[in-house]
Image 1: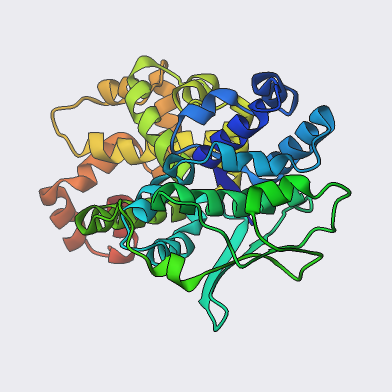
Image 2 (image 1 turned 180 degrees about the horizontal axis):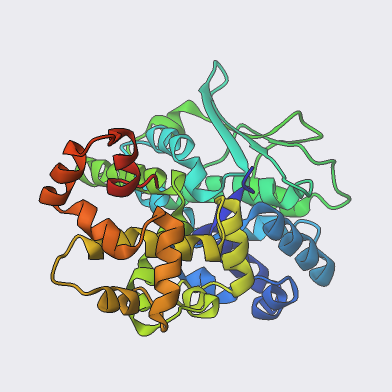
Length: 360
């Protein structure tokens, strides 16, 4: 199973929160083996466990046991990726939070959100899950503080919850929580939650824009669709197609093009069920099919376009892929040859798809 991940947008918010403590986040990322440059890539993701290690190390260095609450001071719609803009253009905060729940996985896969209406008011209920490491309380507390701060930021007025539920035990110093939430606090709760006044959540937002909300819904939906696929695999394949004519591609070149370290690229491909070598081989095979379908392209040109410095390596790879030589494959691709083969005694059409449409 793939590890849960967090968007670079949310990770950037964490970095800003830690920098309020005077921490050198670039050095922190280096210590933890994280790619600091990936924060500038809107499609980059960080594992939930790496964010847990970041929070814990930051707490250790700063001595701030409520460091997650710092995120309330730096939150903006951009911290929530495209979801933040969808929320901003919603008619009400309640409608915005419904979108937040719908698109939560874009921000962070580790969090499960629900939004419910009861006699007391609206409740935004949060559960943060870990992978190999148990989640730190900072993840949930940062999320609650951000959600509340965003409510005030979007509505243009201070929003005070009826209650704030915090799953972690009551700390020795509760003052940072009182400053962040301005509401009765319940520690040791069964889950983390904000209980909000119905009137606050149903009031019209000054930033509402129905046309923009629909547009952001489309962007968020498209992102989720891409996100459900092998995103790094797809992006790496695009880079491979571009650089193959320059010769045998190196893992380092592809990683740099994707703003990833080699180790991160290797791990992400592994999470998506492949490896760099397998992806390179599959990409060459698919391109070989396309090139051989062009009758004016010579086999030598095809070999070089696929990054093979030695044509004999291309011929060996091709036989491994299709169990025939490139010349035999091209002959079978031509209609007259295919008709002639189909008419030959003893021919079995069952094998034809293996040459015409190899399984991908």
